[in-house]
Image 1 (cartoon, protein in one colour):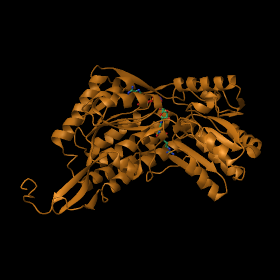
Image 2 (cartoon, rainbow, N blue to C red):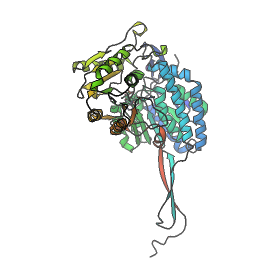
Image 3 (cartoon, protein in one colour):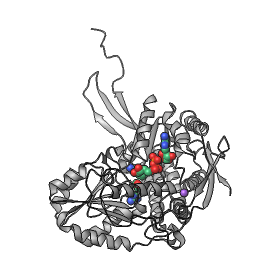
Image 4 (cartoon, protein in one colour):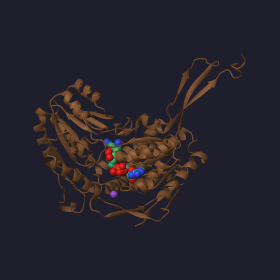
Length: 493
Ligand SMILES: NC(=O)c1ccc[n+]([C@@H]2O[C@H](COP(=O)([O-])OP(=O)(O)OC[C@H]3O[C@@H](n4cnc5c(N)ncnc54)[C@H](O)[C@@H]3O)[C@@H](O)[C@H]2O)c1
Ligand SMILES: N=C(N)NCCCC=O
Ligand code: NA
């Protein structure tokens, strides 16, 4: 099998120490690719290339916004033209159902289009200022931050890459990108596309490898002006600490333990289906997963019975067979999630359905887990506090709005949350009371390139997507202009 390589300074190259890593299909454990397994040497070379491209060459940075936009539109078109290939790669590499993978690729293409459009819109501002030293005028100018390190997780391989690459490139930065070592295959295709459309050498560099070996140097390096990371809270803390060395800008999109609040007046069938989309989509490996269902006590029995009935009816199989759920991403992730399940049982949560591997038919060798529901959970249980990142939901009840809000916010995380009710004013009150960055009313999990995405509290800081997502990758320069050049007489009293 030909090994996929790093892309540094416009060239494909093997890892400098020659190491490679097997990439596995989680549906059966088969090797589906071999990629470069980089070390700090590779990352440092990529940083040097990006630094040279940004500070010496400057052709991307100084290219006009509309010309950069042209390039991003061509990238979007190329992604769209290769949708089936990219969807299949993410499906095989991550395990997700094919129809979900196709949505990811369409979203990724749309994200490049969105930032191509945004970079041509008015930016900055013009300010009327008091005449301090005579008549003056001020404006602000948006400029790229410089060399950006981008690190992403495995749950949405191409989409998480795009959420960072599209705005970073639109803004005129030069980047070093390190995808998750578990799911790098679609990123390699994305960089083939970058090469084909003719991004200047060194503008976008790809380094494949593990977090500690290939990712950490991006956080440590004093030649990196910004690091942006999506992944676990623990790794985010390591990155924030390392970034202190040169006070590089940091963007962190981290984990969550998000509440999905359902009032008794909600449409039952709708709430059940959205709750499933909330916590079983992508096998529950979604940072915003509605993994704590808070339900009004009077609706609980009916809701849980219906949720379990529908969860038990979900089809499970390899992502390519387009089931309702595919396998978890890796043997390690399966083991981790099974550990949470065992400890939830030991702490006294009631297992309503699932809780075990699914090994029927062609699933015997894969990392499949049945959708799992725990009832009678308490806020002090691990299953209500820690992010599981699997198809596992914890159910708690509340008796009034105040208790629902208190339980919802009783978490160190603050990424997301949902509320289901037919009382419009209550929906808005509860949504406003949530200490979370992404919220849903009478739905759960859909998100759009146009709107900012990110967390409160230990779910991180900064925002991906929307206008905010572009600002992340820009410095703002204040420009003060003297409208009457010449001496002001300050020292000639
Ligand atoms: N908030 C969001 O937008 C969002 C989106 C997707 C996933 N997530 C979170 O991601 C986590 C799951 O992903 P994961 O298991 O890949 O997370 P992870 O933190 O283990 O890894 C994420 C990335 O960081 C790299 N990494 C690991 N250690 C590193 C280090 N010391 N220095 C630099 N890079 C390092 C990994 O190689 C990978 O590329 C979950 O906690 C989930 O909530 C958050
Ligand atoms: N609905 C979508 N695409 N969600 C992406 C969530 C990314 C975080 O895991
Ligand atoms: Na994989």
